[in-house]
Image (tube, rainbow, N blue to C red):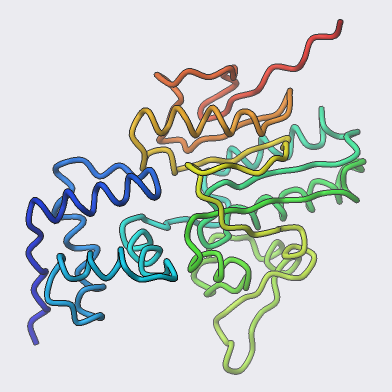
Length: 281
């Protein structure tokens, strides 16, 4: 059986989708992305039995719950992630958490584009391991905020359940310490133990809308800035830096940089920045 043909996306239809994505989510879809948009939305059009992009677009913009709009943005963005992805950041987190932050009464960390949860749970496991090896004052007051724009991936993240193949590269000792192995109908699946899941609070946050009025010692904003144009990147970084406490650290993905973006952070190492501490009077 031949695969269904991808519906034709007209130039005017692409401009409408692009403008909607920019207005609602700050997503940058420049000319040249027509093929990607057509391919990503084709499944939505087939499943909804729409006659084409124009009818689908009218449905998305009129649907009152906002679920269709979220489904559209889910299709246009890539939620690729993995446990201990770009591990140098977690090594650095462990080093600083057990070093300069060792005597902090609490530790607040924000995973600002958490996708299906692997990043914040990796943060939790890293800090649980660190505190078990080095006594840290913050161990009794550790909180991790994990946010994403997608309600669909947040539901998966909250469940904390993953296929075994997602954990292939995780050492067996770590899996025994932090995961429960499924049996019977759940064979081939693992679930994070409550000690890990309870450290993470999941919230839906759109980074182009007002951000939490909280401060954090570490903010992970990895592999998300690439989706925005320069002016939106500028605005997001500025507001995230306001949420970072003096002396706190800011991470971007290793394929990203803050070069060309105005900010008050200092470069520490690749994809890692620090906010200056306040000077004492």
